[in-house]
Length: 452
Image (cartoon, rainbow, N blue to C red):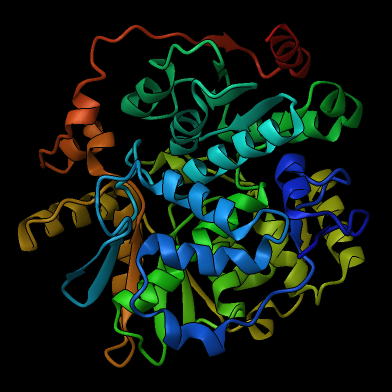
């Protein structure tokens, strides 16, 4: 399997090259040159464990790592999870909930970033070279990336996050890691500022090559690939239904795009339900065809406080009929004016449904589920459940993805009058921390990378 860019100027690169490139050198996102149809193999995988299934799902996309080595990478990656199922599913009223927070940092990002960290290490050892990882985070990506990279040989990681705009626990999970190869950079701005800085630096091909930059954000195809697996796993946990719907709380579009890819690969997903908070650029796009940047609103679900969705371009490529020229025109318009438009989006793709949720609705659902089901959800999952409840179809199973442990959001839990804790998070209190606080300045960030 080879990979190409959504913008058409990069093609024919291997999986390992795609992992190391991260963002395509033409500014686009890397995608597989073909999408394998696995529908005729579904019946044979019903009794596989999560790791065994991951090998089967990932193998068609990876032909430059032996199956034996890939199996070891996957097994090592999920040995850090604290639940035997990796991604267990439970019933909550009319909805099935998949818990994706059983990794080392208690967030769904661990599913992909444990795998990506081990894959980076594997490739670097083969090549006898080093890597500087640059990433932007609105919350959980940073700590999950750090957990996947800390202490590894020949890798430095630089995490940018918006100062004061992640939860206190999320910041502690990042800044309390004192390993020499971990560098936390607090940007005085929004997550979108962090993401813009990251993409601008990656677009400087001379700097990227000289300092061996790599990406762990969901612009890296390996992130999406690892996330595809749990959609297939959910299918078996639901009893192999004829069709099923999946509701995904999302801001960057990576988590739900993995579901879109799973559907293209033959998984019988009927609808992908996109759940947003008040930062509803994606909802507005699917309703109107207009993709327009707005002002970032700070909400109870901070990982979704995003106005520019980094994975959207991958979906746009398929929506434009795999026409890279159309993608480039659309993205150039958006980057220059903050607005771009496609006609007849709703009629072009019936897969997606969507809705947004207010802070008040988020708090109400957390409180209601704690009382009705004796089950506490984090605010991002609450956004998903709010939207899922609006779209229940008694004839089709509905799965909602739960993206983080609620104890990571103590202030929101307190506002909802619920108490929840986790020993991993409690142990963070009082630990020494380190971070560098700077203005959103490209040259300053480049200097930090150069200094190492």
